[in-house]
Image (cartoon, rainbow, N blue to C red; front, side):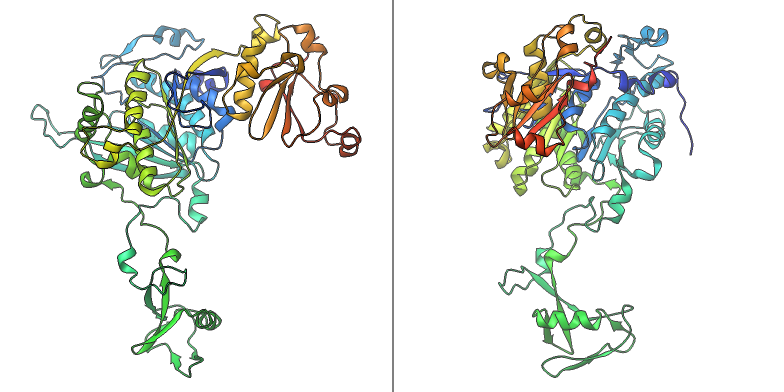
Amino acid sequence: MASLNFKGKSIIRNYHFAVKYHELIPDKEKSLTARVSLNDNLIIHGDNLKALKALLPTYAGKIKCIYIDPPYNTGNQTWIYNDNINSPMMQEWLGKEVDREDLTRHDKWLCMMMPRLKLLRDLLHIDEGIIFVSIDDNELANLKLLMDELFGSENWFATLTRRAMHTVRNSSKDFNLNTDYILVYAKNKLWHGLEKSRYIRVPMDKTGSYPYDDNDGKGPYKLDPISARNYYTPYEHIFNNGVKWSAPAGSYPRYAEDTLTEMEVDNEIVFSGKEPKAKRYLWEVQEGRPPDSLLLPEDVGFNSTGTTLLRTILGGGKFPQPKPVELISYIFNMIRDKNAIILDSFAGSGTTAHAVLDLNKEDGGNRKFILVECEDYADSITAERVRRVIQGVPNAKDEKLKNGLGGSFSYFELGNPIEVESILEGEKLPRYMDLARYVFYTATGDEFIPEKVDEARHFIGESKEYEVYLFYKPDIAYLKATALTLDSAKELGAYNGKKKLVFAPTKYLDLADGELLAKHGIKGLEYCQLPFEIYRLKE
């Protein structure tokens, strides 16, 4: 396999491991929900590399679909390299605009993308995860090699081609470059190939091709011949009504004889015309057809389509070249799971959220979106678009959009990092409430309510499934001496239908000893070491 080399690769290769976990701080005022929760639709404002790392404890291996639209690195629109890596070369790059005259712009772009793609890969569902990445000619070749390396060339599905602009640039010196691309990779293509339901499909309406319905609960069906060109060894079959049947000359039985008998018993054989026919039900057919790699404008729109729609929602001049919602909806329609979690870590104008809400409104699905946007317009453009789409856009031509698509979202700001080094050294230990907030979110994904904290009982809150406890003080001596023991477990109180999840530096209690636990009335107790093993006891 061809390999890709670029400046900084050896430095950046494992940088995603060094990125610190950060808190995700809820902002109730900017949210549109009754209760802020990490289990809601999410809009996160902050650096996407740090935000992706912060999402890992809650969402690792759970994301069914990722769509990202990173900077195309055209040189016409500058971007800034912001990953603060301890390397002289990258410190020189830090905070500087990357423009067309920058001779290392491709290296910088690849250094920006590599750790983000690695974290995105970790967030993808191990079997069903699929990632779509928009790009144009400037970085297509580099991105393909990079994704082959990170996801495996065997997991490449396709490179989709789209005509992005319908106008002709007379100023072009040679070719009029008006296309862009979407690279499609699976986390595990082998699973997709073996799974009969075929995950990637383009839905199409087949109801007109299934004109019959016996109103027996089996749904619409059509009539198919019970013979075919090349299936089973020829045989003669006598139906219960005395009809003798064998496949016509030049053809063979479509079904094994035992199957044909079962179909007759189940009333799935119809006697009409020259030979009996089989009922073929709509529900038996795989939904949709394999998508084409050439995306047609009538299906996915142009960039100008996205601009016009965004102007309708927010007014003019808000965001350059937003993707059309038709394109993103078309992509998400390929994902058959109507409960899929969909992530976009370059959220921009919020088209991904719009598409998810639109699809849910259309087919009654319960898809969920997670958006990450680093720029200051995360609230004024990204989230504001989603608010208006949910509540309704009065001047919209589309009736659904005019009346509002419904839904909710929770808005989060990226908070401070949990500094492993300072904790191990006993410096700048986080306050009890700060750590309580973090571990509670990590464990439950629900809103942390400070008023419910009872530090004396170690109680920090409860979710639908858990009561959560935290044994902690910002004191290194306490951390060295404290553990979950039989006595401290008994003090948590009797089982009340919810599991008790205990965070502590360590434990001196065998939770696998069911006899001991039962003897002392302990039930439903689970233990977690304080986050990411940062509180290991030190001499």
